[in-house]
Length: 337
Image 1 (cartoon, rainbow, N blue to C red):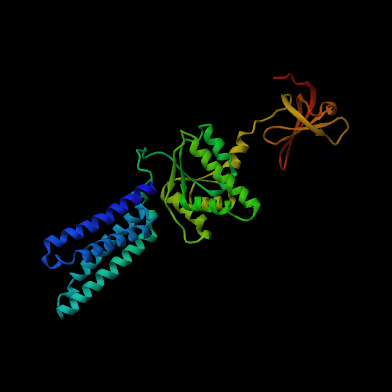
Image 2: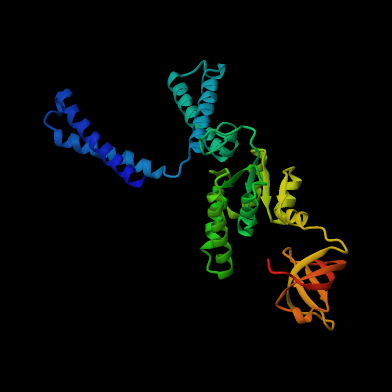
């Protein structure tokens, strides 16, 4: 893509030079100034390319906002200029006032429209211009949800049937964390980037990058809630403070921790479980193992089976701060599966 743009820019500058050279045949005064005309044409082409480079990163959403602002500002200036307020007076003064109104109103309209360009979701709802169903549910993804990593596994199961909206400022924040000098933050950021790549590799997941910027990193949470509100989307996050802010603003938020708790199987007394014993327990003969959800299982009379997979019968379940503590009696060594 970059090589193509370079070729196009070179061709454009060359066309400007050729056009200036051809103008010398139509304008008799410039017939003997062809070199100067070609230089001016090249200079104009270079200036246009420089403007193009300065506008790098200016999104279509921003262009729509600028166009809207110019239109509204021009309309307001026209209404005031043609109002009875400027019907009488010195024509020169009236003309200057009209020019000032046009410049001021278009400037203010453009600036205000650019500041609120995210409100143009109704005009250009998505960045990717491909056919989408209008009623597809949307989920705005927070940085913490990408770093957490479980979102990729949830999406692989096809339980989440919504389009994932990832704002560009979330991607920038993720890159900032990955570039941190702190090894812990760096590892978290890189894990988030890897999770993003895993999501892109899932074919049935609709990922949409939302072109949206912020002036300060402190505004990320407020901007996420605003985007979810304006797009009528849900917010996926593991940040409790952000979730409370979203809930206060009336935005539905998806809690991965609550989903994990809801998916934990309900264990009842008398049920048989299979687990690996990893260490000795506090009481004589006891051995400890863990279920996939992290619940600790204390198995009686199983110390001799540490390091092996056994079958045990649940005799008691107690809630604890880390989940559940399960007590069981040994039934025997599990058969190799």
